[in-house]
Amino acid sequence: MSDPLEQFLIEYVDAVGGLADAVEPQVYDVLMPDAATPQRIALDPDALPEHPSAQLLTFGSALLDDLLERAQTRGQIGLAFLDDAHLHPHALAQRVTRDVVLPEQITLRVENTRPLYVTHSLFWFEVTYLGDEKEQALYPLAIDRYYGRQVRYLDELLSGERLADTRRWTFADASTVPLDQAYLAARDAVVRTVRAEVNTRQHHAKTRLVAQTERMKKYYADLRAELAERIEKAQARSDEVASLRLRQDALNREEGVRLDELTRNAQLRIQLKLINLLHIKIPRLFIRTHVTAKPRSVPTIHPASLTLTWDPLIEKTDALVCPHCQLPTFELHVNRQGVLHCTGCNPGEVG
Image 1 (cartoon, rainbow, N blue to C red):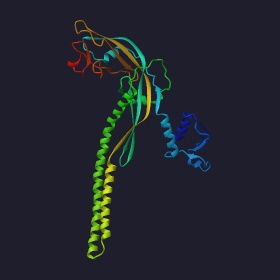
Image 2 (cartoon, rainbow, N blue to C red):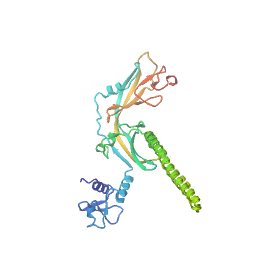
Image 3 (cartoon, rainbow, N blue to C red):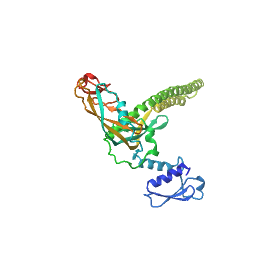
Image 4 (tube, one colour):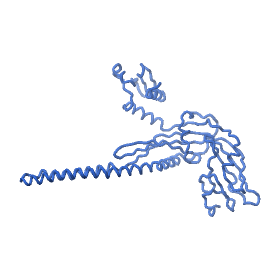
């Protein structure tokens, strides 16, 4: 089936539990679950003379807009699994401990490893730019719900060929940050991304406004000059000029209205809306480690254990959470009290 509209129609009707019966090529009788009688739909305009009661499904048609809106509403929240990653990497313990930088007096020993499903929430935000024109853009963004961090490997998550609607493994789910917290993190990230685009658009809008205002003022100045010349000639002939002076007042009012309209249209307004949400569960290896200090170096280490994670999807160790400030890091230090902390922490405040 090469026609994308025909494929969309068939898949949509099947997804909502309806029936689509092919009457002839690109002509269907469609029965929706909430309808009592079938509806004839034609995708070929040439078929309409033979099927006058059919509705035409084509790009830009009201029928297609209605189906797309229904499909979008139906698919606002989904759940999928991406679990075809390699869960038995070679020399995992050595690779993980090598990725984490520790002070010389600290030893990290892997105690056990277990896989858990980590939820990734993929948000689709629609940004609408309202000014003299209306433009829309779509921004997808994913949040790792275990760490609460933005995911950088969107391409893998957006690859529908790897997604499944059922889980392959019996692994438990890892703990997750609340969905509202993940949403706020995603929204803030999108706002930061959009801000540069907004600044650019506002600059262009101001530049256009200056040029349009100058042209508008010159236009009305020429009209007033022409009208003043007519009044002067009429007065020289002792003709009545009251109507011409009324026209002057009308021109001034009209100019003010037009200039106000230009200013309003130049004001850029932004609308941000979440239109779709997909939760994707992906296995990740959770590695529990024991932390010890070499003899006569520092007191007992706090914390005495750390949980590291290995992401099979990108085959890398995740940045661990600093035990002191909770920020992501790959490098830990230890103070005189034996408290672990990252490079960004102030050692004087640790412990």
